[in-house]
Amino acid sequence: SFTAHLSRGQLTVGTLRHKVAEEYGWPPARTCLVHDGVLLDVDGAMLTDAGVLVNGRCDIVRCWLAPVDLPMESSSPGEKDGHAALITMIADIRAALASVPTRQWLSVLAWCATAKLAGKAGFGNPFVLLSLFALVIRNLGQRRPGELSAYNVFNKDFQELLGP
Image (tube, rainbow, N blue to C red; front, side):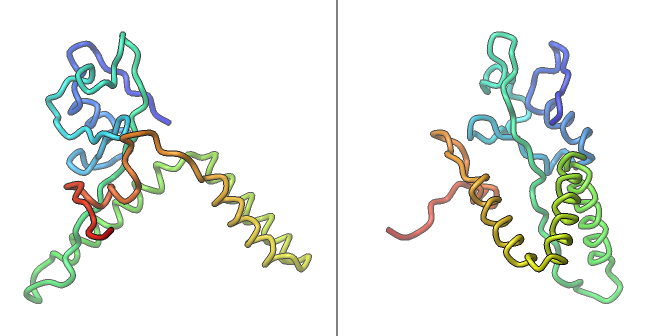
């Protein structure tokens, strides 16, 4: 969780995007912001116009790092595009790991220790299966009307899928 402190003159989507990018170490151009299922993509838009600020109170804005298109192979042996892509990918992984709160890392470590104990007691497989089942049940939720689905992270133009 992160709280951005903005002065009156900085109440734009672009300023919020830069604050979030600075906090998590992300490139601002790849930092995506969503409020109430709407992608905030106009940097010059005021936060009040986007519905983020209402009566001086700020609502929750979700953010994520947009994926980057990595080149599959260099066109010539001397090019360093593959090396640059690898460095970009490593930086993205490092930023993603740093954005996970310490409490969640501790939860993962506690689960691993418990899984090891369950394995020694002969209950490793049931422990893992029940843990996965509990994880799925715990993370089921209802989207609010107009809220983006997880699919829309990869569907920038919001194109409909063909089919019934």
